[in-house]
Length: 215
Image (tube, rainbow, N blue to C red; front, side):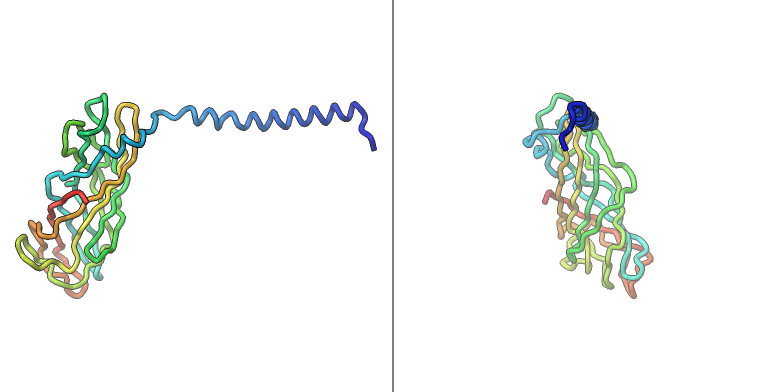
């Protein structure tokens, strides 16, 4: 059956309306992309932030070890060096997005943020602070002697050996994200703990003070 000229014109007009509706939906996507506030840092800018010592020791403590596991708390002690970065402003903003703790038994634990995520560091300072306090829950603690002090050859059954912090850096109109890796020196216990884990419990808790170096 052949369409009349009126039917052809009507179908063509409907097609145009369909195209226009599709074009209208695409406008907000383009507008959203153009509204990005700060340009991302180029590939050679974020690597200039490197892990360094800050302190140079870090204290990681635990309390109420029960059922062979407990919670460890990290309270600052990691650093970042930005002295080789190109910049205009005198300071940069560093925000910790997440942190992971690795124990000597190779188990890893994701940190739960407690406080202090962000700091403003000076570009000229080679030991800028990596801020934030994190808790690591469900850390496994086998029975054994955790009363180990600096200079002794023995080490606790498990102890922290490394930390990984993912940070967002902001300066001028730049934003970038980088992962910083740190390790703890085994022979640098300042304190060990208040006692031993026995029968899966240690009511007095465990304290590790370790020298930290970039991984």
